Image 1 (cartoon, rainbow, N blue to C red):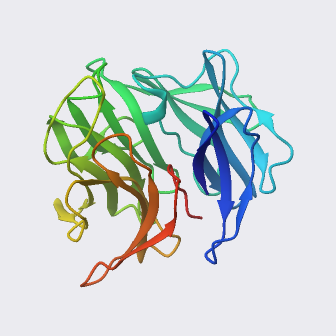
Image 2 (image 1 turned 30 degrees about the vertical axis):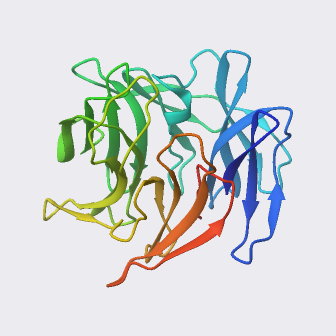
Image 3 (image 1 turned 90 degrees about the vertical axis):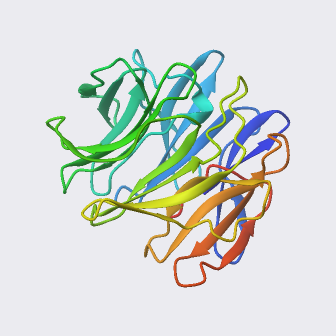
Length: 277
């Protein structure tokens, strides 16, 4: 699944590996950041209505749309940089609202506070593995910088830290199935600016037991960014967005096969915010 901009609105699409595309949401609405839950056979996504942004769910064919959130909504420094998590075999959807992380049942009931940052930093991205008692978080200041990427348990106790108060932007956050690896992208230029433009964003895999980080963007073309990284279902590949670092060029969706050569292949043109389930 991915997002594509049409007539000023974000529109959700699904696609197969043969390139066949199917439009899931109306181009008269602004819908983005789709996440499929295989066990529930549904898709969760963000949709704006005026100044309000809510989490919705729908069937795989785009039918049966349902608004999950109501009084408390996802929020942060930049809604386009906001992410949420719907763990496998779970009915709970986890989403950030400024410095707090909440969970809510997919039927809109059972809203609960899960975690609050100790320093007031905004939570922008989350990925949850309930069976392993692990929550991966990306936090930042109100401008999107002073990045922390770390893993905690459901008691709020720290398990591992991938980035600690670094300058520059980051995006994309995905735990591996066994909870041993954390995938993310980070702008190694450490540039900070008013438009959140990134100059050299690269994909990294942080190994939690070994406390080591591997750059998997070795063959990234100069002057481009790798963004919105996600593992493939078998975790032998990652899917991501590559685009010029000018901040205005078309975004395309690629994959990398994680082996000695880290082969890059373009999958879809004019798309962003991918998910591969």
